[in-house]
Length: 58
Image 1 (cartoon, rainbow, N blue to C red):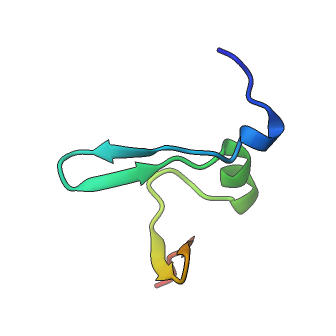
Image 2: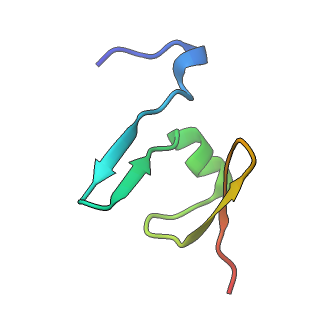
């Protein structure tokens, strides 16, 4: 596997998951910095020009 250039590490593709969902992977470094866990719930919010993904709080 080739290593990516540092400026290309945050470029991701949108992937189909099932029939009605799409997914975008995040860099492992961001995942670790945020302290997120696998299967953790997150909130996805649409904002002008993009989206925000935050930890879900009860």
